[in-house]
Every structure is written in C-alpha cells, then in structure tokens.
Length: 150
Image (cartoon, rainbow, N blue to C red; front, top):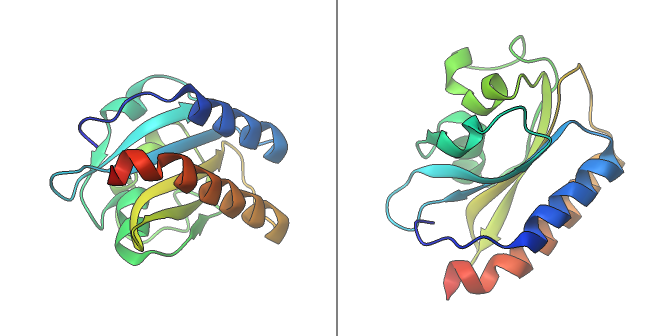
C-alpha cells in the first residue's frame, strides 16, 4: 500500500493480541497497491526498525507465501523446519524469531495482507491461539477495508 496512512488503532489491536497470546512479536504486512511486493507496515514487540525495510515478492517469505496461498502457516522451530533458504524468511531473521503463526487478511475475497505472531523461543500455537489470531485478522480486515478498497 504505497499511500497507506498510519492508523493508531491497528497498533493498539496488535498490542492487545501480543498481551493475550503472551508472544514476543506481532506484525501486519500488506501487499502493495501496485505490483506484487509485500511490506510489513505495523509491528509491536520489535527489536529494531528493520521490519519497515523488508519487502518480499509475492510467493516469497512468510508474508508472500501466505498471500499467494491464502492459507495460514505455522513455523515451530526456525530455521530447522522450513522449506527453502533461511534468507527467504527476512522477518524471522530480523526479529530473531524461532516460532511464528501467520494468517492471511482478505480484501474483496483476495488475500492481500498477513497477520503474524511470533516467539523468540520454540513454541507450538494451540488451536485457541490460532483462533485468537484469526479473530484478530477478521477485525483488522474490517478496519482496513475502506483504506484498501477505497
């Protein structure tokens, strides 16, 4: 989203999710309006500002894979249980994440965003955890709907 404007309420939602899940990191990525690239726009629990500079191609990295597949993804033991190269997962490297769970955000029935929760230790996300992330993703879709579409 090249003309993406800051919405403090999104940071608040991410912070609440981080507290409720007791995770280390929560971030939101969105596909650019023009072209297939995906960028991380919001994060809480971040170690640095590197996430703002990460851009991945459609189908690459966690965000690109989720947007291209439209399906959730869990990584329990990074870098041991991944397909492809470690460098294909820049958000995991930048934030020193070991585990993550991420879900797509849909706009006009197409996956255009990703909500990711992560831990810097080995962690398996329970069904309750996954449901909470999914519910939060739906809330974010509603908030962002007008901005993405409008």
